[in-house]
Image 1 (cartoon, rainbow, N blue to C red):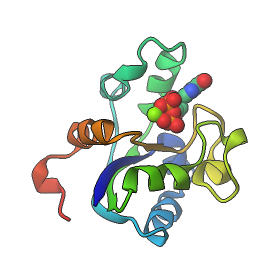
Image 2 (cartoon, rainbow, N blue to C red; image 1 turned 120 degrees about the vertical axis):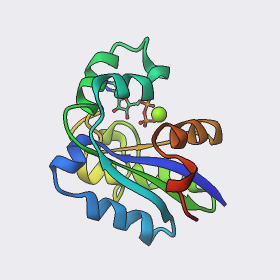
Image 3 (cartoon, rainbow, N blue to C red; image 1 turned 180 degrees about the vertical axis):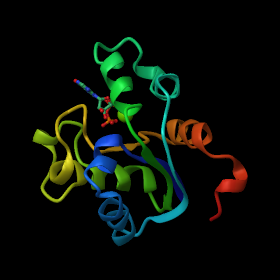
Length: 138
Ligand code: IDP
Ligand code: MG
């Protein structure tokens, strides 16, 4: 059993597809073990995406991530990290496979609707960024 952090980004919330996105996780056998809808400050977004701080899109990305509410979730299941990445599709929606969340909902490479942890280490750090132990129930 593995856990991963998912975020429905501000564009996904604005498009009113929170339920459709969550339903894809469930249909693919992932269990939601924590969930909340919050609004990040610019500084929250900068902290979350600190690994990207040298990238040219960091300012724009953190403006986007703090412009409106997001939904943060912890998904649990076998190979949850890679399974979630498959359900999400490629970072750039133009390169995403048919039937993936990003192919179906993303606006562009930045406003790409969902986040998913990319390794066990980042999943652990990212889950702790948003949830304490009492908020996650398997
Ligand atoms: P990922 O979300 O698929 O793991 P990362 O490379 O970790 O992709 O990038 C984090 C986020 O930064 C992306 O999901 C996207 O919102 C944004 N991003 C990535 N590459 C670009 C880019 O070239 N231009 C603008 N935004 C980008
Ligand atoms: Mg990433």
